[in-house]
Structures are given as C-alpha cells and as structure tokens.
Image 1 (cartoon, rainbow, N blue to C red):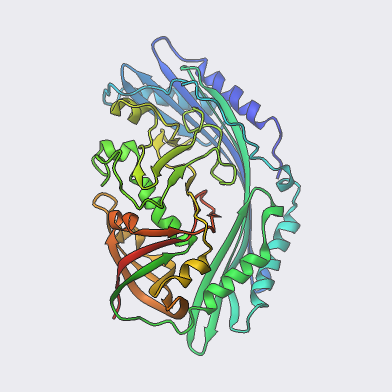
Image 2: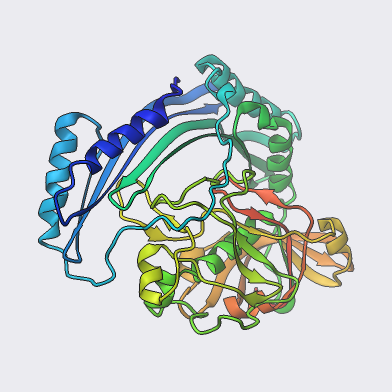
Length: 453
C-alpha cells in the first residue's frame, strides 16, 4: 500500500480546480477523497480472507438562489468530474428554496495542527499483516482450554486523505492512518458456548497489543459460561467502557442542532440546565489526537475545536454545522460531518467522557448489589432518542457485596436516557479509545430497573 506525500496537495488542487469553474452568482463546494485499506481474517490457522482496496470520492455542492444541488462520483477522472459538476448544477433546479442554504464561511478559529499520519503503517507488507492475524488467533486458542476455537481473528488498516475547497474561501486538506486487530473467542463447557470479543486500535501496527486483545477476548467468553437469567430487581449498573460508549453515543447524538431544530431531542429546551449528574462531563473534541476520529477540519473545512457538551452535569451547548447554526441563530461549532457521497450533516466527531480518579475494581468494591454489563443488544430498536425511552438487552456479571459474582444473560435494562444521565454516581479512570473514535470510561449508574425471569 502506497500513499504518496503529495496526496493532500493533489487532492486540494483537484478540489480547487472544480471551484474555479463556478459561474457568476453560484456558490460551489467540492470535496475529494482517496483511501487505501487492507483487511485480513484468519480461521483455523489459515487465511480465511484477504482484501486490499483503493477508493476515490468526489462530491460537488452547488447553491444558487437558495436552492441546493449535489452530486457525487467514485472517480477523479476529468470526464467524471465534469459530468458530476453538470449533474450538481442540474439538481439545483429540483431543490426547494431554503433561506438558510449556504456554504460555510471561514470563522477565524485557529487550526490545531495534528500529526495523524504514521508512515510505518505503509511499510508493513501483506505477509506481515497476515502474520498478525494468524498470531492473534494462535494467542487466543492458547490461553484457556475452554476456548475451543476462534470465531474470528483479524487485522485491518487504512490510509486516507481528503480535501475541501469552496467559493467561500475554504481550501483545506488532511490525511490520517489507522489500524486495528480484533478477535472473537468461542468458549465451550459441555453443550454451552459463549462468545467474547476484543479489539485494539492505533495509528500504526506498533500501537497494537495482540496479547491484551487475546486475553480480553478469552476472559469475556469464559467468564460468561454458566450464565442464566436472574430475578427482576432494581440495582446499580456498571457499564464497562465499551457499553458506556454506546450510552454516551446515544446521548451525544441528541445534542446536535439538527435534532433540536427538528424537535427530535429530549434536551431541546434545556441549555444551561442540569441534565446529568455533576460527576459527568462530556466533550466532543476532534483536536484530541488520541481519538482515531481526530481531525484538523470538519466536513465543511472549518477548524475543528473542543466543544464541551455537558460540563459537571450542565448542558453547555449543542453542536452545529453552518446550516443548523444559521437556522438556530448560532455559530457553527465546527461539527459538520460528511463523506464525499453526502452533504454536510451535524454530529459528534470524537466524543469522550472526562475520566474520574478511581479504577474499575475500586468502583465495584463499593457496590452492594449490582451488575457489570459487558454487552448490550437491541439498542437500535430499544432506544427512542426522541423521548429518551431506554430498554435494551444485556449480559454480564452480578455484583454482590463488592465482588463480581455469577454471570447473567437474557435480562433487560429499563430506564430513560434522562434518568440514566442523572443517575451517574461515578466515572472510572480507565479511559479507553474505541475504533469509532469515542473515548469512554466505566460508568456507575444507581437504581436502574433490571428485568429478568
């Protein structure tokens, strides 16, 4: 896999060349991207699959008389670029007039320069990537005799660059690398089987810890052997960083100007109010290079910035792109999210919780009756982000007198998002950065309804 240093310059030159074709009275924006990636999966000591691909993206947005047209393509060829521009112009006629349509104007926010590119990723050849996947599978099967097989073990990476230019004066480009290893262990005891998964991410292969991933996958599978339903009750729920990230992502998704303007956020009229426990601070910060979602600019080319969403439990702000900001009478928060195939939306880019000062074991030790949740199911169907209703399946380990006890499955956690946020008693010190770019730590939430047998 090669990624010439000139990728950013070439992409920016292409985007600017499209913008230079703007007609009088026409606002024009162009985003172009190029990405190369590899995926390897191992099974039973052999390579199950190996893929290496390169993709190109081109998106052109045209605005005239408050009407917007958009078109995209998967090629940077000259004739494709010309056809895509013509299609975007044609689509303007089909757009409804909207007084808030317009391009993002540079706002003078300083750019936080980041080095998100690790060239050592490019030096790793196909054979070495295969070896990583095979070695991970060997480690998983060698840790515990109850792990009879590995459901999956794999390595994946990507190196990409993108550029945005517009008639409003935006002209930016950036690039990044990322990689991951993941494993899913299958533990068996008699006729019972349990599956446990783990993952590690980084900018380059040297960031990855195969031993930690293997041990985590095996532990998550074997500790659930013997799991059964338990009685319905109210108890303290401990979400590990991965399940906590699911909860935080739901919360963060309700705090966008787009959802507020559509009347689809339970917190729409709550700016300045306490919507969570005072121990919870939630930040969207794509300038934090620890996140794989970190970036110097948002999807409209504005400088990324740190946006505190909830500070000590108080709702501080909503996220905006330029469109939602204009409609709400607010400024963009540099939170436009998009790819070359879409127009800019609004969303969290690198959501994280500010960690506390106590380790997970210490948090568990202070709980008389609770459950440590290690996986959730039915999130898409069981959570209503408009009303906040929350009812999802869960499995994990009961907590009794400050110690982990028997495993449980086929239970349901019932609450509302509002109630969960207000019920946070503690945030762990174990901040973990996940593949999607979210940073989360263990969350302890009091008095949650658990539905069982």
